[in-house]
Length: 156
Image (cartoon, rainbow, N blue to C red; front, side):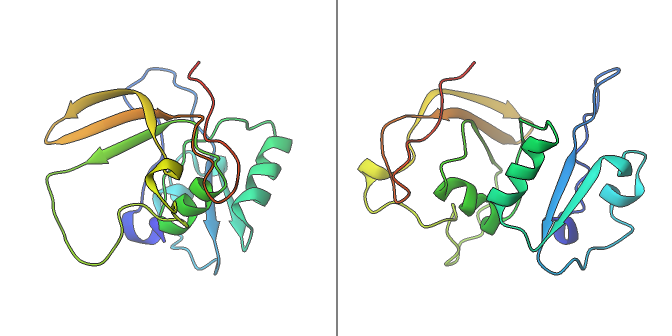
């Protein structure tokens, strides 16, 4: 859905001779707009498409390809799967000065039964970017959540 809604580039810009990342798309339908940046820019050969695969299966395949670090930008379903499976080791949350309201939750996934089992961040930093704020933090190892797996690893 993110490809259709936002048409992201998912490239490194403003850095000379930067190594461009692999861009990975998860889709149920495969119905993706071919004119999208991911398929039409000069880095299109670095775009991988997985149709109907679980996040766990995709990550396993990426590991076999030697891709061991992933920056995840996506919609609620994919991010929810990652949160529930405790696959997140660093959080960068961007907040803009826009309040939409409504019944939509801020963070997807199964959620925690109580605050003791919720995702808690440590080593928190804040950075202003134009009119937005970026909050960076690392999940604590406490809080087992529904999966029974602890969050995160210490930052490197």
